[in-house]
Image (cartoon, rainbow, N blue to C red; front, side, top):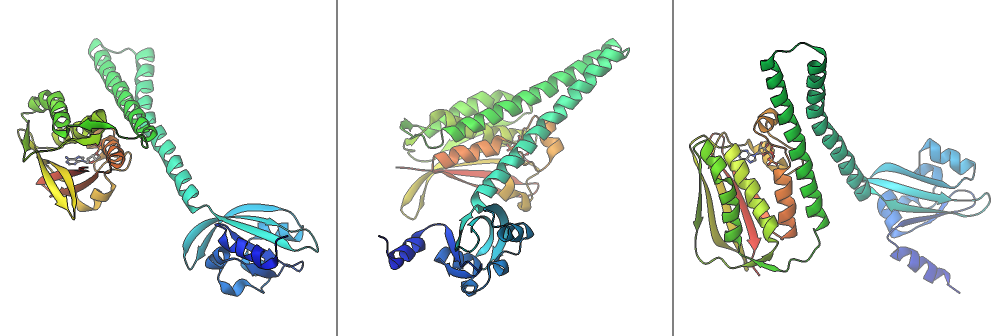
Length: 336
Ligand code: ADP
């Protein structure tokens, strides 16, 4: 049989908070986790002092089993606690407390994402529906008709771009923990991205200039994903730079402590980004100037895709920008 000491030491080892109440609803025992949330002084106090929640108090009075979540601010921060309480009349009761803060955060991110995706898809859809109705109901000239149709086409292209970026993001997330086995030449992938976009850059008189400094070793990675990183960074550099300017990509080796990195600095001249936006640029759908990004075909997902691929490669990215000056995206892949 389990002795009292063993029982208590078992409770102390749990990841959950545990509180035991007497048949009079006084707290007889709280393990370390519960004390971290509610403080040492709770022992000896009535349970009502601890949980001032009318739903819980009613349930205690009626000897019901309770399972609720509630926000709680303790000395160790704000938490979302889930509390499971069981006590039958004239018997001791037990409360088990789980910290749901992380799950709650994750659920919030998921809810925000769904709301954002719906919002982003709804605006082009509303515009398409509006034009369909106009074309169906009104006498429109040939010129108007062709203008409406080209707007509708652009809006459906936009929906397509959003959906394909979302699928890309979700595939990256699915592959996040797949082992990287291929030996990849980063320079080759940069050149693939450059070749795919050079033409587009030239349309507004821009050039992409790749400069390689030193011998760049191969790294373990996913070649297609590395192309995607540079494709997105070049694509942004083209979209947000001054007409006729040159976009540069400098690739060199960089030592931090004893770790060597392949560092790629993609720089362009343009309007620049205000400092306050820099930490948020890799969030899904975050755009400094929504209308501008939309006009030039942005989805607000490019840098989120980049961030996720970099996480998979243990790589990191630093962004610096000067208003009406240079914007630099500095990506570092660890070697070995
Ligand atoms: P988008 O599809 O809008 O380009 P991204 O996720 O690729 O979305 O980029 C997010 C935002 O970061 C852009 O809307 C833009 O405001 C800003 N941004 C990205 N790259 C650059 C750049 N090279 N110069 C200036 N702003 C940039």
